[in-house]
Amino acid sequence: MSSYQIAVFADGAESHAETLRNAIRRNFADLGISLDLLALFDDKAAATRDRKAPTVGVDFGLTRYPGASPALSGLLKEATMGQQSAVKSLQGAQAHSWLGGLR
Image (tube, rainbow, N blue to C red; front, side, top):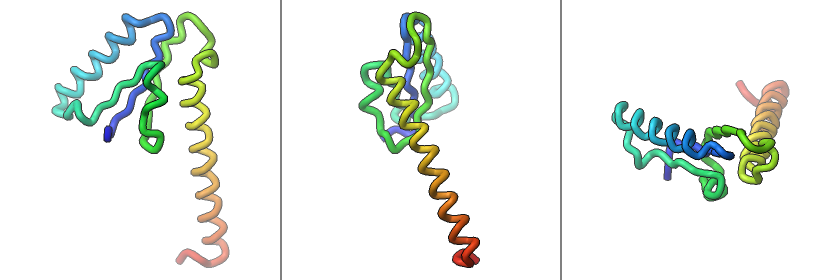
């Protein structure tokens, strides 16, 4: 299981994406963070990430509209759903508190 998940959507900028991946690996090594804790995904592999773990997405978006990438669209949709879930949880906790449930 990775602690750091990064999805890199090259979208026509493969050389830039590879430069970014190499820089991330190098910076991890410089900081003494094990590369075993890092998972880098491309467009095709992004669907295999751990959906419960935080993920950072990078889209170079050089050749097409970001919505054209199913993997990127899925990542954005899941992020939005996660925010909605977090808001609902917070609202539930607030309502419970207002009813005197939390002291």
